Length: 336
Ligand SMILES: [Zn+2]
Image (cartoon, rainbow, N blue to C red; front, side, top):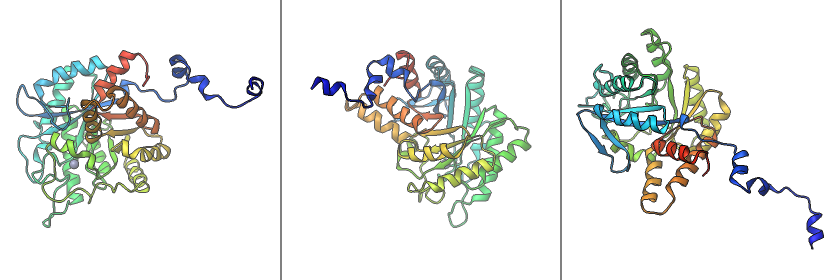
């Protein structure tokens, strides 16, 4: 029996799994805090730090409360933020979105003052600013009107660039918006401001908690007329190709975890930097299970983020960013 075993020759993949040092040596995917983007919700007022009930651990903050956030991010090693705004008032054309004293414009100026090296990225969409809650302006019959919406998205982008934002991130899913925004930025002299395009953004149930966070639920209908059908992957490639053609600098797939095949398809399609957005519902699921004691939060989060990176994402936008960065720093490696 012993002799028979000795004569066997087969691959023993367990050999390199014996110790953490060996596992670490052959690890194919490593997470690093520098690849995370942390979303922040800003609102008017002073001293505001309101927890979002469907996203435990995430807050709506007033501009004066960003100081603590900047310190936390620096401490954790997270060097990029994605900003969403809750305006003082809403109207049919989302006016505050492109006002020079709009809430995100104010937040950008404050963040650049507090930490000039922090990468500030502004979400560009009208849904947080319109009273009807859709991502563009409406026709008389209540449809989202693509081309007139492009002008407003362009104005919003230029206004944010004027405030000093580092990256413009259009999330509206209007056709032609990347090209329109690029032209507007260039014309205004912001030729060096990159665009991170929400290229393949699906009409997803996993955005539920975000709509509470950003107060952006549509007042009628849904967004399936402009966001993508969850069943489609070839169409995602078309969207990505169109955004690249229109000069996107970074492309994105959103959500992340139910769409890892899309992340992989886009990774194989382009050499551009690729972001994946680990959205509010993905966060809420893990958080709820962890708070109930049903899963080990640290291991589950790092495993989920590793999966997104393994699928091909260079950049991960995630509400777990600060926690994950601290866990990575404290363990000194990427072990799960
Ligand atoms: Zn929107």
